[in-house]
Length: 396
Ligand code: SAH
Image (tube, protein in one colour):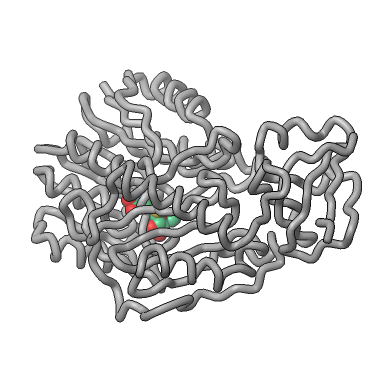
């Protein structure tokens, strides 16, 4: 049986020979053979050459997601099993993120040649998130493969807000396999005990991508007064406190996050750390008016720019935050600026820092330009898979 074909418009094939996995509707001239949503298709150039195999979705702007550039390669169970094995091998065997009590991202969508699925391991539990209809339709198969490969206690499905509309995907959070954890449970990170709530926590339960950045910040924290703005479950503040910070204050607008952070402080026996439920913009304004000072400030806001048109507004948000923060940093203070909007580049952030430095007549030195931990790799074919930036600066 021949496989339905998606034929590109003339001169639109180059990115896909370059192995970019997203074929947008606008690049397509014709579809032959009426593929079902989620079904396999072959991508062909306008001149009739085979380019790649992918999965079709008429309801998404990403009309085809590509997985293989080998003719005749079926996108079947064996294929996905092999991709999962390759992704897991990187984390467990190469990066040695194999502490049974630890946590790591095992599969990161495009970065692992698996556009549309994210798998995180939290000790013996897995969370799975689907961002494509086609892979979500195969969720039973993925649950079986992951169970056979990893023997988890349970696999929990997390859905991202807005994805239903983007992909025509009706999915709800819930158990995919095995048992549900009774409530928040502990994982180990850099020697600390951190609580994770798979069912209600943000993202897929925890911000794994900041693991190494928390450690980098901890190295600078001894003796300093630390402010962790947008702290979620307290990762940065607790690492700093455990590394000997004079004091640490964490702020987050979510009551549930602040509760997790306080429980984490207790679980680790850390005392000079406090967590407050507050809007960061309001609280920084208030603290600054009171003349409060901190020697190390971490800013890790949520994604401000979700679309290209939102970039200027997002940069205004970062500007406000940074301006508030540096007024509270004495000379030789450390500013840690994180940004998880893929659309905002290091260049944009650094240009912003330069402008603020000049306005405030302070000198900034960039000490480290960091990304996410290595279990969140970037595919060279799809550099959109890179998103997290973390600039560590000295403010003179
Ligand atoms: N630093 C955290 C991750 C932060 S994610 C870590 O290391 O785990 C962003 C956090 O910002 C979320 O916890 C969210 O609840 C919080 N948030 C979003 N808008 C906020 C606001 N205006 N004020 C305070 N917190 C906010």
